Image (cartoon, rainbow, N blue to C red; front, side):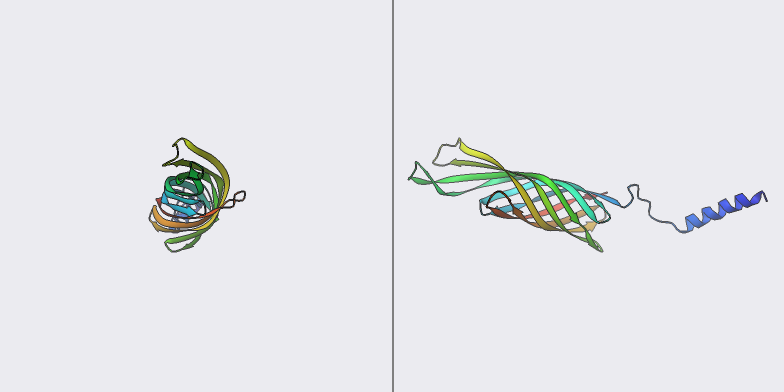
Length: 188
């Protein structure tokens, strides 16, 4: 009779060890941290090359994260601008900083993850006019943005590589843009 608890404990231990499973400290939660680089162009003119990063958490396929990207700028001729008024066309340099949140849903097929997602945040547009206008003429504007798009990621162990294509929309501003980025990062 005294051996019954001992045999039950040994039997239960053997049964648990016989059906081994992966031990994930975070459970079904994945954490992604990545770098992004790409370009944005739209009805407001080109923004040039952009570089930034993102981080997020996936739980049962649902993704939530944060995103920051700095478009370093591009120069174009300003339509309707001249210096002095009625004179030569003016060059306009624009750059932008975007920061916000993202939500989406992961669809996994083997090593590939496809994520339709929506971003929401602040679009800080900086414009400077010059050549031949004085260089100190410019302005900074902030706009709320919505960024629906799709991300494709390929898993290489803890590393991932991928790309995203998004439409950058502004509810309070009659402009839009197309953004395309490459991504590289790690998943925990």
